[in-house]
Structures are given as C-alpha cells and as structure tokens.
Length: 530
Image (cartoon, rainbow, N blue to C red; front, side, top):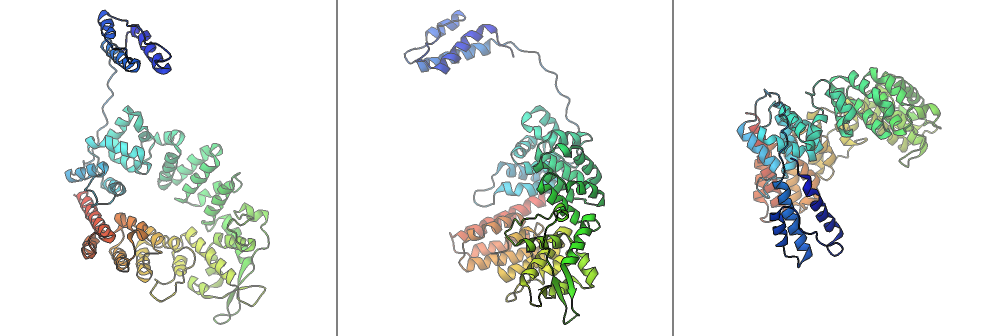
C-alpha cells in the first residue's frame, strides 16, 4: 500500500508534538481537505493531550482512506506434497490439547512435560501433523528448542513452506533432522545458531562419522574455544581409530578444556597411542605383588611428578578437586588406561581384582587412600570405555536391606553402561532396600518408560513414604520423573493409593494427579498405535 505524500507533514507534526509534549509545542492547525479541516476544528482543544489523540485518529483515518493499492506480489509455489499418513483423528485432538495446555485443572501433570514424549512417538510412527496444527506447533518449537527436531519432522514440507513466509519460524531451515535435504546440512553448519550446529553435527556423526569429522575439521581453526569443546564432545558417537589423528592434534590445542576432552576421547580407543602411553604409566604405578590366593596384593607407587608428556596427554599438573597431587595424577592415569590391561597382565577377573588388598609399595601396611583412588579410577574408566563387565563388578550385587553397598564410583554413571533391563533390575533392588531418598540419579539413568518391575518398586516406595509421614515435596524430583517415566500399567495401583490416602491431604492430591497423568499418557500412546 502507498500513502499520498500530502499527509506526511501533518502526521510528522503530530508525532513531534507527541514527543515534545503539548506543554512545549502547540497543537498543529487544521489542514487538508475541507471536510478534514472541519472535523479538526470541531475537536475540543480544552484538554490538549486528549485533543492530540483525537487529531491523530482523524489523521490515521485520512491516511488509510487515501492509500493506494500496490501491485500484488506473485504467489509462492505451493508446498511439496507430503505422502505420509495424517494423524488419526483422536491423536490430532490429543495434540491440540497438549499444545493448548489444558486437560482438566489439577487432574493431570504439566502437559508441556508430556509433549516431548508424544512428539517423539508420533514421529517414530511416521505420521504428519494436521495442517491446521502446524502453525501452533511451529510457535511452540520456537520457544522450546529441544522440541524442534521432532516438530520440524512432523510438520514436513508444509512446515518448511510456512517458515519461508514467516521470519519468526526461520529456525526451521536450520533445524537438522534425519530427512535433511541434500545441501541444507552445509547451510545449517555455516549459518545456524550454535545449538543447531551441535545438533546437526551429532546427527551426522551417527549416520556418517567420517563426513561429520570432515565438516568439523573444515571450520575447526576459526571456532571459539567453548564451541570447539562441545563440538569435540559430539565425536563420542561413532568414535573410531579414524578419529585418532584429529584428536592427537587437539592435544596441543590452546584451550586446556579442549585438550582434556581430546585426551579423554583417545583414552576410550584401546589401541590408540595415548592409551598405550597411559598403560605404561599404569603398569609403573600398580603391580600385582605376592602369591595368590592368600598373599596377593596390589602394590601402588603413585607418580612423583606430572611431566610435560603427562600434561600433553591430558593430566593437569594441579588438582582441581583439592586432592593431593600424587593421588590426583594416579587417578587420572588409571582412568585413562585400557581396562583390559589389568585382566590381561594379571589373569584375574574384575571381581577378583576388586577383592585384592591395596598397599603402598613402600609399606606392607594397607593404604586405604590408594585403594579408594584405584577403585575410583577403575570406575571412571568403566564409564569412559563402556565396559559392562567392569561396571557390573564395581556396582556389586543388587542391594538388599541390611547389607552394606560395595559400589565404587558413581552408581548412576556405572548403571548407564549396563543394558537397560539390567539397569532397571538393579535400581528396583536399590529402591526396595533404601527407598527413594538417594534414587533420583539412578532413576535418571534408567530407560523410559520404566519397566513394570521398576515402576512397581517406585510405587511401593511412594506408598511407604506416605505411610511414614514424609511430605510429597521431599520427593518432588522423583515425582516429576514418575509423571513422564512410570509405566502407565501402574495407574490402578496409584489410584488405589489415592483412594487410601486421607482425604484433602497433599499425598491424596499427589496420587490423584499422578494417576490422572498415567491414564492420560496411556490414552495418548494408544491413539498413536492406530
């Protein structure tokens, strides 16, 4: 639309008066057509501020009435055809509820927390979103970057077409999905926001590790140190000996955090040059001493200095944890050494090695500190190298009431190395023995939705907590996880807890809400199975 230039002066005068104030600049005199002048003269100027607004309204009407239509732009080509099946009608209605955020006040958990599970499931089923809901989906993903991959995939060609018309949805062209068009990956890498670039690199790494490495190599020298660190971390997917030259070069990076990450990645490659160097240092620091089975021990000789070669291989000379320097260096060496070193050199299993006493090589007395450092280093190595045998040995048997735990290292990290079913069994036993007080991180390591046995253990622990008088908010972290991860099949058990709780209490409300959430999740997943 174009506006006649004759209105510019009067409109600018009104703007200037508004900016300066009517006490510093008088109202402009009436101007324009006779009809407009008459209308302006009829304005009551007793209150200058009110009169200014009325004159502005008159001028706005005149400007709009005098606008001339501009030439229409060419219509864009229609969106490409999407051949995927549209969502079943019930699932589409459920999606409208999820993005609208209403499902009955107080009866269901935060719907925004259930939306990611719905989106992922719908995407896995190969559905496309209904056209009418694509704009609201794009708006939702605009404010929640973690949803963008699933939303862009579900929106499909229509979503990309709409994004081309609305700059608010420009993220669509930079969001990496498995179906990214040829050539668009380079655009994401060179033009995308940092989070979008990391996502693209991670996805490409899973499908074509060599191409992802080459892409990272192409811009490595110009990336910021903090960006190089996270890009390097993305190489964990598909890590192989082909990555060793690049990672060896990164050991001399100007950022110490990048150097440390490169060293950690190299230590997960058992045949890398760094792993071999760490193995030699580990042999010098720990040796099997005495005869087995009675007199065997592990004699520890921690390093006395952190030389330049150790520092290049990722061992910081100063401990960032406050531990003694020799203990720190010792732990770093053990954590980076290949785990098969210990079993191959001694002929012992991880369980047998963990049962051996640990002493200082210069003393026949036990050295508890070295034992703790050795087990902690082994635990870090098990997580780093994804060694299930060592993780299983370090975790020890599933906990039982009255039996002290033998776990070495961080249990949740060690659990992440085990197969999902085994994680669930161990965590269920832990909860049965110790309750929910220390189970938050363990539950976070378990695959979702939780298995029925693990879900049953969690529900039973919640029942015990309610019976002993604990408050729900003391387990708020676990309760938040149950809404997303508890098996929907446990809904009847939770409803029974709600019915058995004292009316109008916090636990009654908590169980009622949780039961409603489980029913809601069961229904939404069933609708996507059609």
